[in-house]
Length: 438
Image (tube, rainbow, N blue to C red; front, side):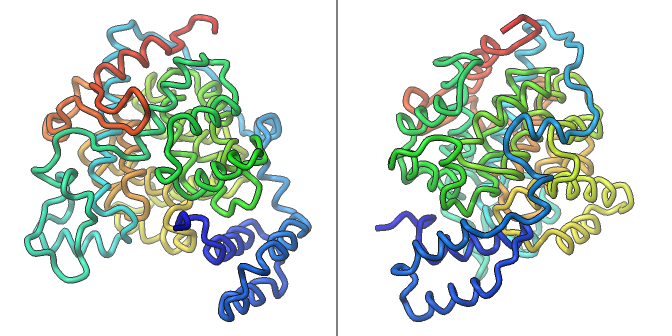
């Protein structure tokens, strides 16, 4: 059975959407691809279609959205690249443990409604008399027609949480820890690729990672694995891998972003990479300030000033400033950027921004708002929770979100099948750069 992310018709349709977002002139190619799908000849013509796509001239906007690290840095706005760090080991441990816990709580919260639009989430919560969301998702028995929670609810809904159940968002955080423990901070994109092959079953990776994994198995190397017939190259998979790079770079957003670039260049380009760099740099900054605008700006300072993601984040910050109600700001976001795919980096990053700005540094409110925005809810809940956890520390996080996790985490990564979250935080502390030279 084909991996669902690698079906020829799905990939070509997604590539068309991706190219249109990038500003390509596609001529009649979309119509010809749709005709081939309709008459069931698309597989026979797929190579020719891909070759035609790859031969298209680059649009002018491409120059403002490079994927090479040095080119990205040349287009960054002015920003603080490194902050003075005043954290002893005990304080940093509490903060990084808080980041792990916040990530796990947010991910768990979002899993039952992953991929749902905001309207469907609100309808479910209203049916449960639980809108706005204030806890893990309650379970309705029976589910109203069309509002069945995903199968994940069995272990992630209110009353069912007994730890952080296995999830790809958390697998990548764990795998990044393994990469650092194995290769050190000098790890390369090739090291990341090798870690994937050795630790991740193919059917547990998705979208851009699945395409890159297949290319690795066929002998390609990074960064070609990110660009070769990979229509998901700007989707959210890169951002969900970013947190560890911020954890081990407290106060150093530039280094966090560089680590994220090395990692994500295996599978992503342009705004896909920028989403990860933004998240890593923001998390790194959350260890040194509780100013959410400064945290968001630190992430923006590590990506090209004129890229689509930077513009979308700036728009979202403006809407949050102008709209007293979160729902009104979300409506502006959806009207402007809702045309992207549910799993694209741009709308999901903006949903995280709204959670942060309307959550005011409170884990409970932040992850609930990020998840109620819909789209890739386990990812937005996880990243927003990670930022607040790093900012507040474990001791300050609310027990009703943290206690159900029981300090336990499951992962598919070899050697991490059943881990204590506190132990992962201690191992992270041992790898972190608290001011020493690498």
